[in-house]
Structures are given as C-alpha cells and as structure tokens.
Image (cartoon, rainbow, N blue to C red; front, side, top):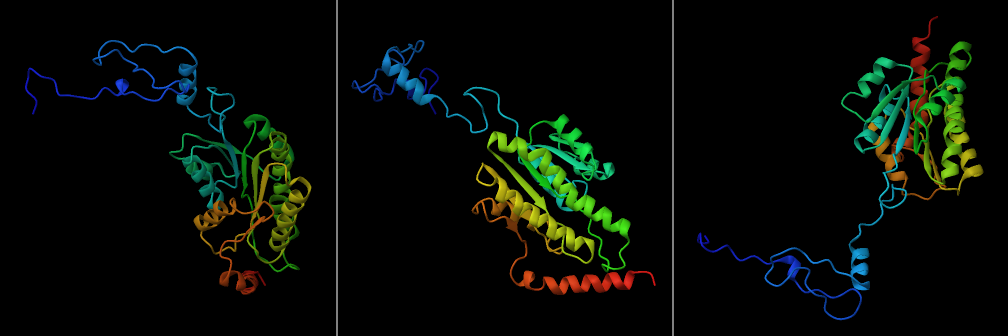
Length: 290
C-alpha cells in the first residue's frame, strides 16, 4: 500500500509518444513534461489527420455524420396473436419502432405490453382505404411482416361463400393492399424488406389463398427485384412453432435475393404436408353439420 506522503506511480497515457500521422517523425506529447497541466492543442496537418482518425465512423442508420439516427419502422399485421404477435415483440426488442396492426384491439394491447417502442393500430387489412389511412399516419416503413390471415378448413364445395369471401379478402387482398401501400416507398429509398406470410395449407379457400400469396410474392419479385428491396414469402406448415418460423425467416435474409420462399419444417415434415392437409380435411368433414 502506498504511503500517505507519496502518490502511487501512474502512467500518463497522454504523455506516451506516438507516431505523427502526418509522417513527419515522432509526435509530441499532448501534455507538458511531468504529466501535469492542461493538454496543449495541436495544430497543423498532423493534428487534422489525427482528428480524422479519431472521428467515429458514420452509423449506417444515420443520414449525414452527426445527424439524428434514422428511425427503423416495422409494420406487423396480424399482431394480436400467434406469428404476428411474436414478430412484433421480437422487432420491438431489437430496437425497431413497431406499428402492430390487427382488428383485435384487446389482443394488440397484450402484444404491446412492456414494449414502449410498439404502437398499436386497429386496422382491417382487407380494407384498402383503411390501409392507406394507416400509412399516411405512420410514415415510411422499412420492414413489413404481413401475418394477418384467417385459415378455416372446410370442404371446398360446402364451405359457405361468406367464409370463402372473408378468407380471400383478408389473406389475398390484405397482402395486395399492404404491398401497394408500402412497396413504393421502399423502392424510392432503394431499401426495405417485404415479408408476406401465406396462411398454412388447409382445405377449401385457405388452400387457394396460400397459393395466391406465394404467387403474388413471386410476381412482385419478378417485377421489382434487384432494386434494393428484399422479398420473402413465409409458408408455415401449421404445426411448426411461431418462434421456429421466425428463426427460419431471419436465416433466410442471408440467402440470395431470388430465394423467396421460407418453408419452416422443410425436409421430412414438408414431405408429410399432403397427409397433414388430408387429416385437416377429415377433421373439417367430421365437424361440419349434417
């Protein structure tokens, strides 16, 4: 332990001699001999070069150096339950500003619990005017996760037409409305991620909607690919847990741009998909009124 009359010896980091970035030999210490006093300001080309080296690199999410950070805004539909709710919570935890959308306001409130950077909006994605009004309020969107879907299973010839219309309006037209409202801004900025989630393959109108969303994603990529926007179509099998579905989506962003489809549970589970659809159809027939 050092004595009271003598301070412990410490190295003054400012007095360490270092190369002069101007290339004119050894630089001078930044403080006068002895380590005391006030740091002397350096001048000349060497000081300017050193200042440039010490300046922190520009943040990729900032505009001009030193400007305010650009907000990353994510729009998540179907955010009251299931896949959409988990996607919204994950993005909020990753410091995105999240706009969570659903028709179920109670479910939205539960999703946004303890997430101060999540904003909830009640919106029917099947209503194009409602979607346009939503985008006018929230402004530019950098990532879209469109997970709003309804997936009733019923035999195609006996499924009520009102249910068929509701499925196609929510699942297919909802994807169209969201894409048309958000994609132009992404293309203008030359960046963004548009993720459309197809409903799980089931019987009746849901099967048609699932194929339609996948085909629509492919059409968007063929028309607008190569302009800085990433397109993905998530095609869950209906049995893989939402967290694994989102893990597969996250991994997919490292794949080539044209590799659009995200199929969680691919492999043996994917080979069993026709059997799963048949079992769901059998359950729907059993549950249908006679």
